[in-house]
Amino acid sequence: MEKQILDEFKSKLETEKLEITAELKKIAEQSGEDPAKWETIFTRDQKEIGSEAAETREDEAEAFGAQLAIAKKLAQKLADINIALEKIVAGTYGKCENCDQEMPLARLQALPEARICFDCDPKK
Ligand SMILES: [Zn+2]
Image 1 (cartoon, rainbow, N blue to C red):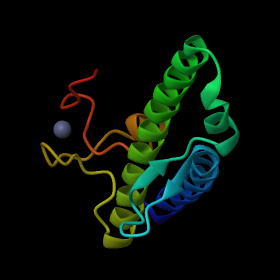
Image 2 (image 1 turned 180 degrees about the vertical axis):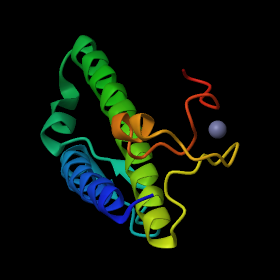
Image 3 (image 1 turned 180 degrees about the horizontal axis):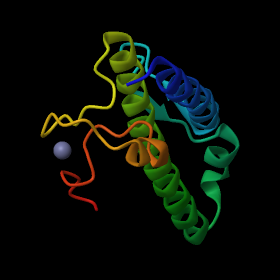
C-alpha cells in the first residue's frame, strides 16, 4: 500500500480512536488490570433511586443492559482500531486475517479497522 494512502488510514483510525475513547469514558471505566478492557459504570445518582417502585428498578436494569451492550460494542471497535494501528506500524495493514489477501481499498475506506475481507466476513 502506498505510504500516502496508509497515512490517510492512520489518521482516520487515530481520530476514530479518540472519539470512541471519549464515548466509552462517558459510560465505562478502563480496567486497572487490563487497559484494553472496559467496565461499565452506572452513575451513582441512578443507583441511589434504589427505594423507588419496582417499575423504576426494571427501567434501570434495562438502561444498564443497553449501556452494557453499547460499551461492549465500542470496546470491541476500539480493540480492532488498536490492532489496525499496530498493523500499520508492522507493515501488514490491509491484509485479510483469514485468507491473507490484500483487502480492496473500498472495504478499508468503509471500515478502516476491518480485520477480514468482505468475502470472509460472516456478517456480510
Ligand atoms: Zn479474506
